[in-house]
Length: 79
Image (cartoon, one colour):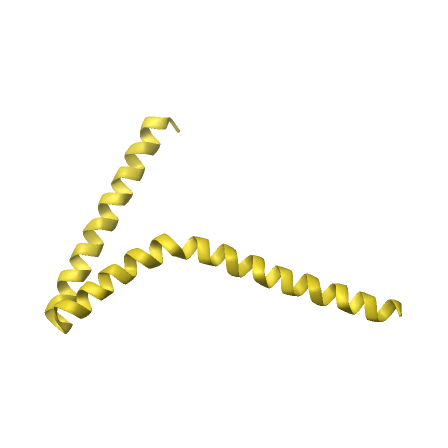
């Protein structure tokens, strides 16, 4: 795939995401009111931007806990 094609696909993905966000926010505004809808829209943006970093941190934290348990178990068995 050429670089230009990838850029166009990314542009299309961002455009579709923006349209979905705006549409969802407008529908939510009619259903629940302005401020809850604004909170929903902002929450979606924050989740999309912070989600991958949070997932990596959680994965690393779980791996560290598992490694510590294995080390402690190995130390108990060797004694």
